[in-house]
Length: 383
Image (cartoon, rainbow, N blue to C red; front, side, top):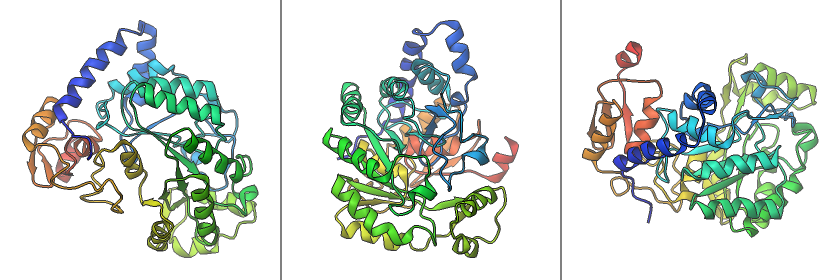
């Protein structure tokens, strides 16, 4: 049975936490939180991305962070403290706290566990919000550190979903030159599972012509280590990434065949093999997910806030998210949205928006309603 979504309770909880956390901060701490990008960031399908680190020294050949303005050098902890980070999130109009609130995704633009103690402190503060937390990592996590993560989860009754990235066993020296060896990451999976968490293999990116031939062996090794399931992810490419792969003598011909235009814009590389890989995962007795949000939702035992089960890449995992069983009452959805300044009408599986008060409102509507938002182009243009 999945946790029940009550939109009005989510809003009440946000107001309560905003007051409680605000009372813990002085004026300069509040000012830093207000100015920080976490207070304005849009929610994506994976959730609201949280930064523990700026820049990443792992310098993976396929990585996109340089295209986003970050560097492969000079890593530093994110400048906000844990409580400032939490307050910044609570100020974000797109964020809702609680188990059925906004999914949190850590590790989108850097390795989150470079500064271990700092990361643990931030994780402890985030867990007080109660939201489903997912982190993706290539770092080695020891048995004792894995236990500390599980203790945070238990202390605040907050679900934490670990994604461990392994995309190659043969060519890690070329594709991930500065990251811990894949064997160490398999040890991380074991340590997290032994600690009582449910580690998930992050099989992303899958790069045509580069690592697809390794998939079955990676799946088998991850299962042996204790991975409960697999998030299967494709590859986004830019000209800078292609150049870097070539510098490492990686054959990019298959990528170039599949992508009509390669420039400074991140473009997805078509991956028709994804369906076959998902079947392989099932045959090995593991749970496949086509999207990270679904894996996070499974760990938290909540209906997917991105509403993948209505319109999205649902793989029919054991969560068995269902319409109409797992969606909140239509009247409470409309009342909750109105309290947030959003005028809308619920029509079955859809929510029709009558205004567009702030950017990113679509994902907030998905979260509150577990339905599909319908927004007229004219409303977006007006905003």
